[in-house]
Image (cartoon, rainbow, N blue to C red; front, side):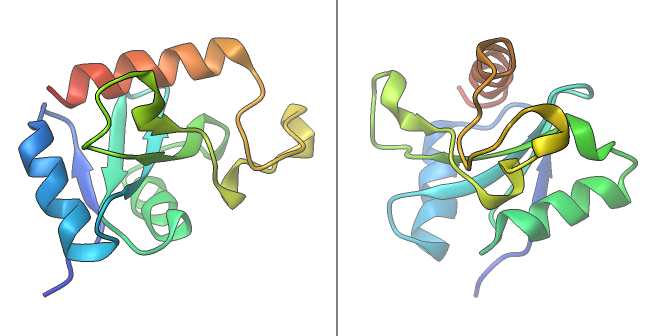
Length: 116
């Protein structure tokens, strides 16, 4: 059974993340990080579904960024900054990647805090 978006406010383990990956894509988990509330939605097929779940919880659009997590990669490469929801010309982000290094650093910090 596939799970819908799961909003993470307390830390989970890499083993739990791996189980979520296996339920959907095998080796990766799509996630959307709210850099303001320091929460994350994950487990859906589309970043847009996770984005919608966070918006329903009161997140603001400009704080939401899509990433992919690879639980079996042990170095910094386990976080991939790639999602269609990241294309935001109004925020000077013109690609699927997250171009602002400050935002990337915040995301890494939040992810490392939420996934142990």
